[in-house]
Length: 245
Image (cartoon, rainbow, N blue to C red):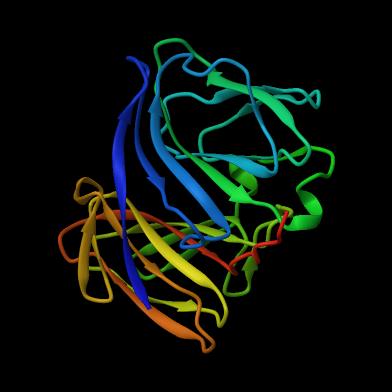
């Protein structure tokens, strides 16, 4: 079944503009929410997370990287095209700021639920440099695989939540079929340009995206870019069960 969910435009001062995705309940599970953001200066002071993962994925067009520091002792530079996964578990405090003043980071901040057994585990961080993210070239389509798998190609990142995240870059009038495994939810987030998903058009400023809820049988999804080059993120994962407190 296809659902349409909405995004909201949000500004935090002069240094942070974002398209924010939040939904109630299990609609996006295991994803809890996403900020598609542009950050050009310190925005959020050190802050804590508990019971889920905070994932930072930088697009290759970012003008600079992110200086990251957290309470586990991690201190690193997240480069354009790289990904950093902080599993908060029992609790983590972190801060992320653009590495160079006056330059803009183009990124996704993705909040991912944790399986019950990981929610109170010790926090830890995983990082994958841009050159280590697998890339698949198809006719008219480039697929980066920062997390999970695409066909026989698998990311080396091993997160605590089984999920796939794909960055799809399509030239004008490219087309492809994307499988949806049985028991898994898939949604497509437009990043740039316009693309057709099963014949319906979506773009960033339309402030909506399609979610295909988990079903018992596998399916296929068609993607096309009839109006010019387009970029989208695809998220795939099995919904996590709700465990009573």
